[in-house]
Image (cartoon, rainbow, N blue to C red; front, side):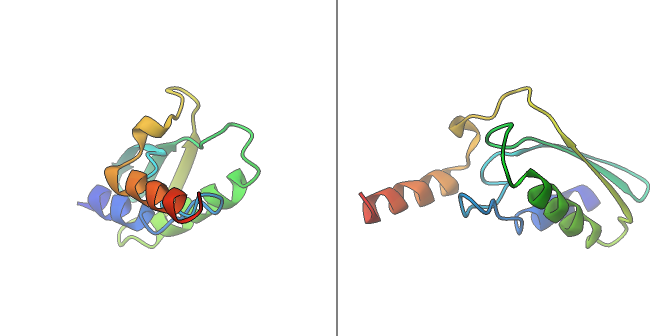
Length: 103
């Protein structure tokens, strides 16, 4: 299914400030596919993120690489608000490891 392929493709999109992919950060809320069009609903860690345009452009680019997808719409939403609780265990472990390496 293309939706699963898009989720995998989005794991390649790294949040430039945090250095962890947006899927493990819990920034992607939903992916809908209709024909060759993907609609991705996501958020950012903070609404005033200075890299919002870069991140959304990277999301579009990654999703368009998925076979069968020719059009991508990225919708930024602010509800529900992102919190670290949305992060995967892998992302949390990465953050902990960094904190231990640089106390």
